[in-house]
Image 1 (cartoon, rainbow, N blue to C red):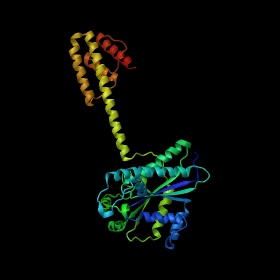
Image 2 (tube, rainbow, N blue to C red; image 1 turned 180 degrees about the vertical axis):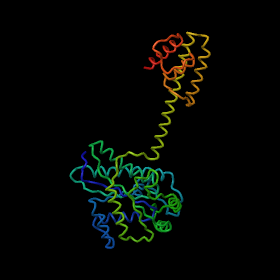
Image 3 (cartoon, rainbow, N blue to C red; image 1 turned 30 degrees about the horizontal axis):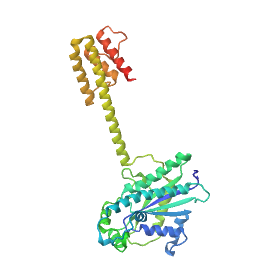
Image 4 (cartoon, rainbow, N blue to C red; image 1 turned 90 degrees about the vertical axis):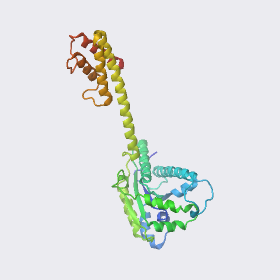
Length: 362
């Protein structure tokens, strides 16, 4: 696969409550790209659409409906919660939407003689949680990483968020006029409004949202100015494109810390076991030379092991450091290293036993 150097793509996330104006915005942009649209919005929409050879969209609701069973559901007022199979379909649909995004990017950046130079992909969803938006960003990063692994080049992908700041009352009114599954239960919309996280790059692990714009859609008027805000946001995202995955998400960071703790615990456990095996071997060496000192040698072993297990030991906890500490306590001589020759048979026995232990580990 060859990645075209001059081509670029922008992933534009449309974020906001149901009824906030996201889908209308997406339809207007798509219509302008197809040479349609109302006279009132022609100027700004033409400027926006002119920046892209191809404009596409991924409607999360449509993907979700495709995942649902073909069952008839009552209108909005008839239920308050999604059924369990609906929730499972919703989860699958989000994964499917990201797969569709990857496919669109792959098709765009593959040179086959018929691709466009510039692609705008609008992702139409509530995206009320930052983690949902981060999933899209990660998908872009993973795509870049895969492309780099294939031919050593990194395509240009912009990532930006348009947040529709529409009053809850307005959203509820618009939502209530919808029919069937397009009408979201009012309680769900209210809960979503209470938990929504507007894009804010100053939040922890939110630097990926550095390109975003808020559209005040309280009046519901589709004025031209709001499209220019999106244009500026898109241009900024192209100048500051997505980079291959490097930083960790909070979930990945937590997993990394847990893995590190487990690794440290495993290392500590192994060190404790090895230290005990070494000290028991040294106690045996003392007993073979001076049997009457075996009890004192074993007491020294226990004292050293208490420090090793508690993690409070001060000094060298390597096998040699532990062996020297043991030898110092048993012989009464403070040893920092092994002497070249041993005048004491006891010290020689301890040193020999230590060397045998090291050889057994190789």
